[in-house]
Image (cartoon, rainbow, N blue to C red):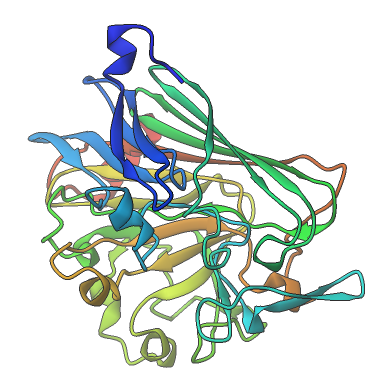
Length: 360
């Protein structure tokens, strides 16, 4: 950890402490001419992301004031999610003929890695420079019920108007593994501007319908002609008025969108209010879209944001027909999520937004 020079000391600041007295720190990445990010060693949380906007710098993600607020946060703001992002039904799965019981932290189900998961653990800081932070975590055999000792490295890197997150991992036994990232985006720079007024485009091929507890039913349904079809850019608000049973089940959007194969771009998001746009590039097969409808209850006064989480299919260990999401011993896991930001300007046509993001 950097403590030597004055410049590097200024790039690290105290962010509170855990109940056992361990200190939490925020690590600054980037500079004044592009993206500026702050990442916590607690949960690898993206605690601040400022990007250039049409009228100055824009706070692009929702944030909380200190470590204790994040520890108590039921909405998973900004965390690195693992071992398994999204839900595993019944908090159980079978692997190689053996049944495993996981911690149940959402009713009878397992959500985002369990009671602590990756997001409420203090990660080791392997290195920190002006533009890069490398975090490391060991998840031991039996943690939250998972098999195998899992070693994970998460690298954040800022370059210009791009923020890169790279997950790398190895396990000494086969284990379900589906890490993702959980920032709440509001590119307006004003969390009081409805997140549903942002314009979203996703190369979606299908959607995973869910039961009342938001566990997938085990099939992929076409997105064409449904509110989940974001192949043509549209605001979430324009879709929410549809009388769709899946929107009623989740109280809005909280669904896994299956992406068209061969697309590097997983999603594009634009705020007509600030003129800021974002593109997410990832090779994940799916993207969880969560409209943030629980935030008003969980964090009154915090404001609006939505989540776009590249990932494998939720509950895949319990659905043989879903692509497997298992990390096996001797295999190196690697997944890169790239956030690219541009500023085409306020109230732009979508072609101009897409062109600005292609250049970002």
